[in-house]
Image 1 (cartoon, rainbow, N blue to C red):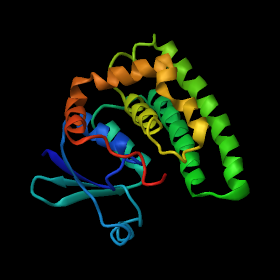
Image 2 (image 1 turned 90 degrees about the vertical axis):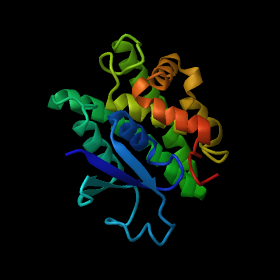
Image 3 (image 1 turned 45 degrees about the vertical axis):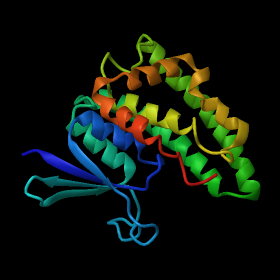
Image 4 (image 1 turned 180 degrees about the horizontal axis):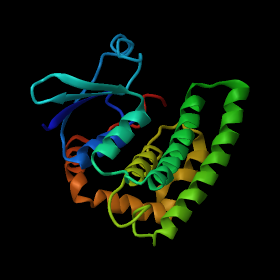
Length: 222
């Protein structure tokens, strides 16, 4: 029996753009709900968003999942965007987790002040520099063909696209000049990845909707 999905999140990129891309690539039926903030956010199963609800055609809620990376990997495994080989999957997941770690540092900075803010700028610069080095090396090892592994769309391809997209529009307070470290137009290997993702036929509905409706803001914070 085919599944239908509802993704609950705010109308921003935030934590959810990779999820939107994964659901689109899966070819499944899915829609979005935008909960009222903050009341409905805290009424979610773990008290935060995103949440994915998977239902059968009969309308029964079979699965309700929280936590961004858990939901991503559930969809990626279910629809063949992560390999079944444990080691091959782990190699993609470690790259994805590195992206998430740098994103988390950025978001902590957005809420920080004083000495902690200064510390986070240094941490972001160090971690972003290392991230670019690691990801460029991975893309080169695969022949710089616009994919991290093989010749077809995968989980880490999608996650990296969403990450670099976020940092192309993360707001004026976003670590100021340090954000340039993640400007994909300055990184040829990542630019190739971005172009490859944008040309993917399985993601065409996502990019068509974005062209018609405009891109979501990266974050609520400026």
